[in-house]
Length: 479
Image (cartoon, rainbow, N blue to C red; front, side):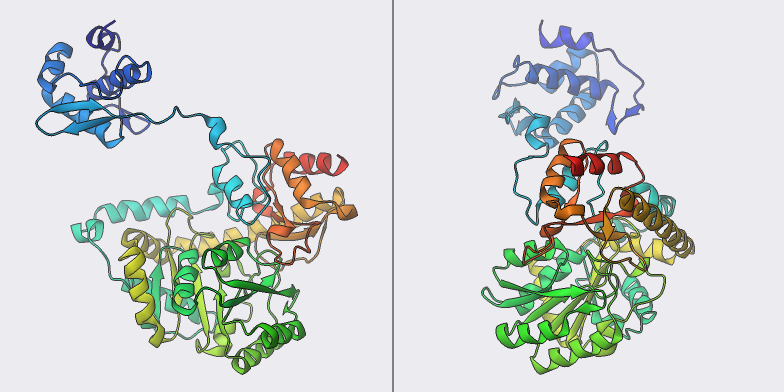
């Protein structure tokens, strides 16, 4: 069957119909036919396609329809355009196989393991090990409203580069929000980034050289380990308890290793859910001054707090503490936007690094974030969210206790429960078993530099409404 006769079997539909984001009209018909012939190898790599006029006449469609179809196929890489010669089938990559991108059950349970499993999992996979809220918990209608408003903006907002420092209106809003946590900062001390992770990356590029030493909590957010390894620095840990780092151990580590940087959460700690006490905060800052230590305070869970916890940046006045944050947890992970609040003399260097690595940043995202945060519905969303998290925390705690899993700390707020498994069970083995059942877990040693959390597990209470999570955990513990 030739290209034309096979095309005629496809049929046509009204020109203005769309389905799953692709036009299913005459343009879609042409595209589908060419794709099917390429997949069936009737059109081999390098083969020349019919001319625009020839194909249009054969299919009884306009030349503009064929041009549109060809341009779309070029954009997706199926065919190539050679000016003055025509269109040709592109060299094809190996056929896609879902098995090739599925979870690799024999992969080492390392700092990348939980992220890979959570990000690559399908919708049917349960993810109590991930670090974000379910989509239904986020302010989707407020985001849609902001998108509609942004679509009516002038061309420069939609198409132009933004300032390297970021949208001034959003920086002013962030400064006001920080003041609610007693962090007094001017908008000109704030730089927007594409995420909290990029914020830390830029700070590491500014302040560290390969071989320098960085201090982290033990346990701490596992991506700190991954990012710092990418910067080829030495990582040392200090035990973290219900009130913050062990101060005596903190002092000893500073004296022995002389780290340049300490990265921590002080609002709601990840993974433990602990809150820094004022006494520990003051002692940590005194030691930082004594040993010339710079502190990066990651404050991305601030919006989950019922009562504001002490902030190192508030006590320090952003002298040797840098505060970072983002909006991925309580607003949207798709609207990639974070920030750095720091002393003025470091901003020029950070801005140069931002230009060198990402040029100007995602100004559309900043506009969207500003629009949502400025809307009166966002505060109502946070009130609802905090109540929902509190209820989920109580329900999940009871459910875990029923199968013998006990929290090591009962958090005052947030979405994480840091727990010990019964009988010193191997959390990594439990995680591998659960993955086979379609459940992604976060075993303790991915958070622990010293690898002393082998029987611990971090649970995201917002992702545990499905009772299958508890059934799989119970089955895994028995096994």
